[in-house]
Amino acid sequence: MRYSEEIAKRIVELTASGEHTVVEICGIVGIDRRSYYRWKNISHPDFGEAIKEAEADKYSARLAMAERGQKKLLEGYESIETMTETDKDGQVVSQRVTKKWVPPHSTLIIHALKSLDPRYNVPERFDHTTGGEKLQPQTPAVYINVKGSKSMAEADASEN
Image (cartoon, rainbow, N blue to C red; front, side):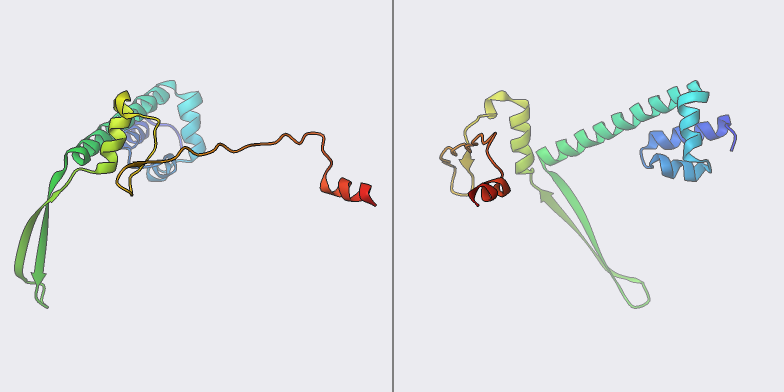
């Protein structure tokens, strides 16, 4: 398929959405993957720049989404669940709405503290399953340099 501004615009929109891979986008717009990369990298520099901007937008949107999700998990949040009961004909018989509080995610809190504040990034190790007792330091592994030693086959042959 030949390059057109209409197809290029659609590809940029799909890229910016972040919902599709390059292979999926090519299938949606009906072009070969090689054409996509040829247009992007060689024959249409404006298209290549638009794709770079769309990818930057996609990653910025994903980062913002991740930060919102992380904030929600750090603070805790209210969840609303709706339970609907229907009869055999599909008519609603009853509906129950329940509000639940989802507490902050403790592992994420520990991770955030350790990564954002050096005071919490202590080298000591604690066993969190036994009430926080300090763990004994582990003995480092000892490696012996055996360079120049015979292989087992050579040792067996020299004994005979």
